[in-house]
Image 1: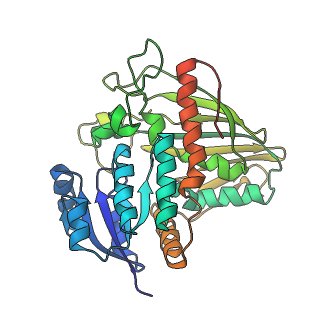
Image 2: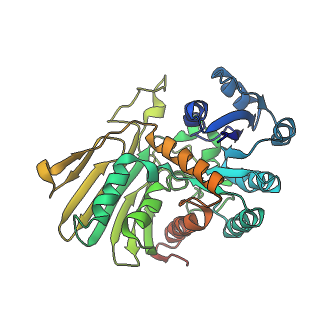
Length: 360
């Protein structure tokens, strides 16, 4: 079967460069073109010498390459609706980087246009394809710890704003300037908007949806930011599972003079750690490490073979399979909508100072 002709759009998302190797080396893909949101993004792209032409508008890219079948949308959140429309009008399949949009009306419009166009739309939540997370999910599904009682998770990183300024802009990240709460000069659009993974994973791990959340923000580690960089969330799922999340920008490595790969201070610049407690025991895992710890397992530890690109390979493989077999991926717009509802409820809780019910 011929490889899928794929392109990239905008090139301003923090995950953009993670796709270069995947798109080049996957035999199921033929990476034919890219387009940049501006000259700065194009200049950075050109440094990588991918051998793939890059244009300064999506319209020009589609005109020069009418055979494009699929696109990776790698832009600021507030650009996603416009770019999805360009793809849907042409029958081009979409892999959208997080977050599609926080605006409920826009989200419904995205769902409608994807359904009407009959195209695949996958949301980039790569942790579902992470080998460590998959092992965690299997242990839970196999009943190794019995009924789940609680989930604790961290998804903490450095601030991406130093490299991708739009992530510090309320308009570009959240979609509008909504004050965090009365008397607070900050706006929605910071660390919470950058970290949907643990919100999405708990739904998969527990097989349930959110009931309510209660959220608090701390004073910023970076007072120059307009958006929050420190936030904690607790709440309950509809099946009674309690959870506590930390989706903060609490790593500070971007303050180093020469930020680059290998500059992790403690112990790495990205962290997704999950602890699941059940009636029969506890499972703990570092999703970017090889070990899953289980207090009922032989030697209390499973070792999982893991390399950093495993989740991206799995993500792309499912995307291609869905295109070829005319089906929607498991992480589609309709699935992800509940995660966005929860994240909006977190902001509503910060604003009111009270628990917030998650809309259904």
